[in-house]
Image (cartoon, rainbow, N blue to C red; front, side, top):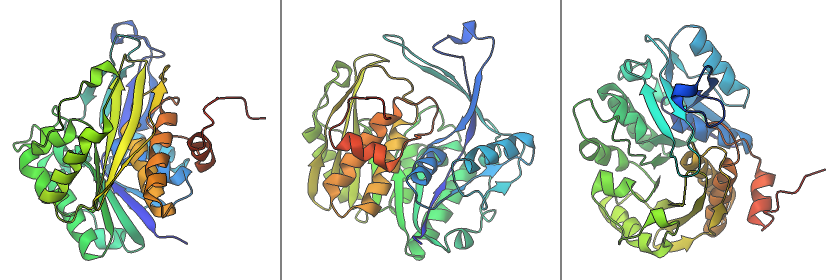
Length: 344
């Protein structure tokens, strides 16, 4: 039995108007749950890997419902801490064509925002694990989540786990007194694997790729080699770095690819043309889930990257935060079958 992957962060109630309605048109909302680290956990569970999601949820019916939602996908919930006032909420207005999506957060004073050091027994959490994943969203929520995240990465390193992060810069969350640039370096210093998009390294670490116009739908992969090299130069432990490459033609039409830098070797992946996006939320998380799986399942780094890109391409066809695809479906797309033909 392989050891577990542990992920840590906030899961929220997601409320979105049906279809592509605007907030002002909505008379009902579709209700699901999602969040960066829980999205990664569900991907890994779908791929057959044991995974545990750690968070803090209110001890009420919504907290119970959230746990039940995770359990149906095979995610371990036994280490979730209960307490605090409320579950965070986010409202999503789905964009279409030339109208972009909109997100409104209602997560102030959520249960995870009021977490404190000592509330989670990280040594017990990591006892049967060999990988820990977090994202830059978590320390952005509050001073408490930043401190608990630092607790976690320190303990994970001491216990010999591989530590991964998604840089995930969210400017609207860094409101508690410190900037991402002040907090993230101390956390990323404990990481072995990191991913980001074309903006994360620039916004958090002031590391920039040569000029590229993502709004034209074309992203030149090789320009991001220098970003990976500069991240490695700054964080000696960081040996594996991936960057997702999204070219935005419209809200409904994107190109999608990625690159991987692994201890000096640079890999580029296939670019997919995604012409009718169902839901792009969780695209980066599905890439991360695919990359963790690929790095653990394959010896070939190119294959690991190809799996991550194909997995996240498929996520754009699925409503909700979670990437509900199987290894066989991802490998089919990796093999070149993008026909979408009916499977009988």
